[in-house]
Amino acid sequence: MDFRLKIKPRLLLFDLDGTLLDSKKQISQRNMKAIAECRKKGILIGVATARSEPTCQPFADAIQPDLLISNSGALVRLRGTVIYQCGFTAEETSILVGAGVAEQRGITVDCEDVTYSNRHIPFYNMPGMVYTAYGDFRRRSYKICIEGTDTAFAEKTSGLVDNCSWLAFSDCDWFKFSKANVSKGDALKHVVSSTGIPAEEMIAFGDDFVDVEMLEICGVGVAMDNAVDDVKLHANIVIGNNDTDSISDFIDRYVL
Image (cartoon, rainbow, N blue to C red; front, top):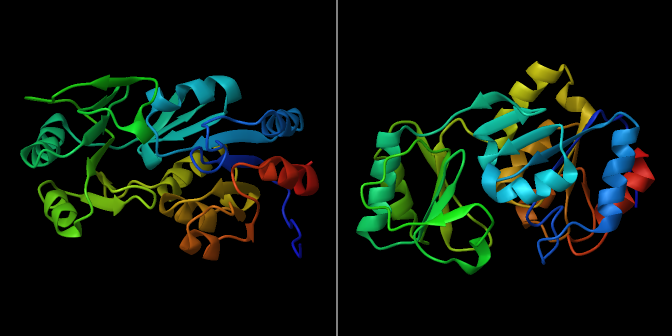
């Protein structure tokens, strides 16, 4: 592999699904050990995920990250303290949810303490999820996902509220709706400001479209072999898939 690490990393950022988590939604012991060794050397550990805080909590409990970027960047905690948050008002949430309910689509809503869903979704059944028919649902939220493949629906729905953007998932027929300035990359600006660590001294690991900006901004962007092809194009290096210990192999070879 013709790759040399030209930085001394001070922060490692891991996406969860498709990256640090294997296909069984577990973190391998070797990867956990590698993360622990990095922490011993004073390297900060971060998680940057599209999941809500409740649905990533079991993994956060195991990793104990210094930094937690959840909801694709809408909520950022540094050592447990919120340093940035950006989401929909209760009224905006009601409007977006109503658009999905009107067409009898699957809907998930990420709030700070709970993730709601109106149906049991095999790939999305996670701890911290509460099932509801929504009805007159009015709560502030960070992210809303609505089932579908028709981009015309996504475009129309995002236009119902101000400053809303949408993105299609690469591995399922769903759309993600969030505030237009929300992204993992934008979240890093607040991390840099709060920690004093320049992005050039960070290494990010990811696999999906929402990871592209993060991989580009960090000093080194690492894509998994199972990543979307476009994501690989924006990475400095492509390692093995998430069902191998390729992350720990990378850390052992280039970081420790």
